[in-house]
Amino acid sequence: MPAQAAAYFIRQTAGFEPEIGLILGSGLGGLADELENRVVIDYADIPDFPKSTAPGHKGRMALGELSGKKLICMQGRFHYYEGWDMEDIALPVRTMKRLGIRSLIVTNAAGGVNPGFEAGDLMLIADHINLMGVNPLRGANDDTVGPRFPDMSHAYPESMRALARKAAQRIGIPLREGVYLACSGPSYETPAEIRAFRTLGADAVGMSTVPEVIAAVHCGLPVLGISLISNMAAGISPNPLSGEEVIEMGKRKAEQLKKLVSEILYEL
Image 1: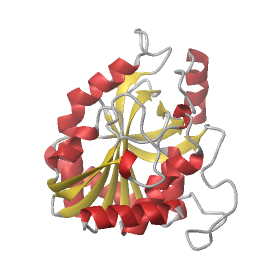
Image 2 (image 1 turned 90 degrees about the horizontal axis):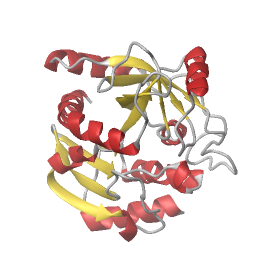
Image 3 (image 1 turned 180 degrees about the vertical axis):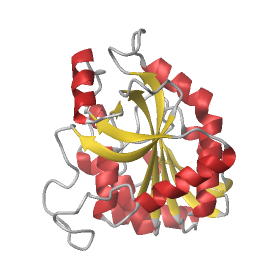
């Protein structure tokens, strides 16, 4: 099995047993550079692993310690719009589960759909809407990994979100909370689509995260999700949307996100 082979390679290479997994979104990979006793493994060296081609994604695993926790961080994720199958996108989560992580933190850069948001806000993900048209659990189910029909009622547990709220309050970082909606991309959404998403109850929109969270819930991992609102979405922002804008905002807010995640880790 690909996840088993990948986990074996990482364990043999790093000699490390992580407790918590992190998936770092566009422009946010710098958090992994803060790890102590860091070991870095390129995706290209891991058996059966895809290669990250998205701008702002380094394409490597970083293992080490931060805030007293043993972490494994994805510096770059895999997106459906890159041409990868859903199994490829879910593979890192399943690999980290086999390495022994007990919880997963996912971050992403997203467009603001809620008109009360501003570019640069951090949003705690309370729930998601999957409009990608695909699901990583499609096909034969491995009952040793998880159930055929996993319950998604508590994909982002309130207990995890409460820890994040307390951590943000302690260090004085404002934290929004809302629903993340995922599209397949890579084109940005139209103003009409954004109006429809707002009607559906979305607060932010992006092109990732949801497949990874579904895979995590399937294999029994509690998830904490944080979106950086890198720009306001089409029809709300007066400016043309661009990938460069997303990466630039990630760099500007990286320090704040590092502080927040580091504080949250103390509680996990």
